[in-house]
Length: 146
Image 1 (tube, rainbow, N blue to C red):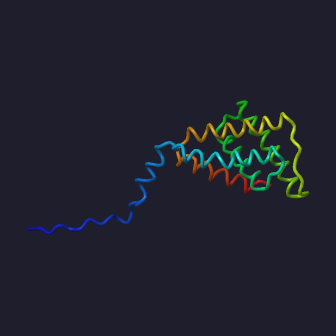
Image 2: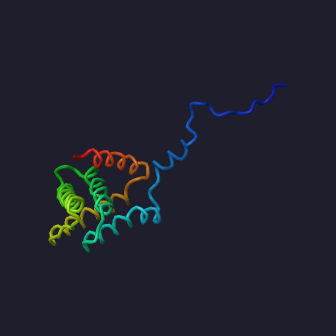
């Protein structure tokens, strides 16, 4: 009679493979969506009330860059994200160099709000794994930009 051997996982297997697969196939649940959207909405509120910090601008910049990554270059939504990126760049520069806030016109507020809404729509459609990949790319864009 042959002894049963204890099954040991191969050294080549990924112990997190099941979670990776699940993360790549499921959508965010309601609580997760709130956790991803709420900080951006709070930053938007601070931005509109002109009491924002550099972190608020970076939150909005991250959301805008997610929109830039997932919209078509010739699409109007991509153009909105580009305009918002320019507005946020001006706001960040003014805040970091002078310690003052950017006065926004109504059209600028509309651009920034639309970019945040694009981000919220994306959060409702991507999987956690996709968002992680997108955020890794966005992180490189933000921290490698001049």
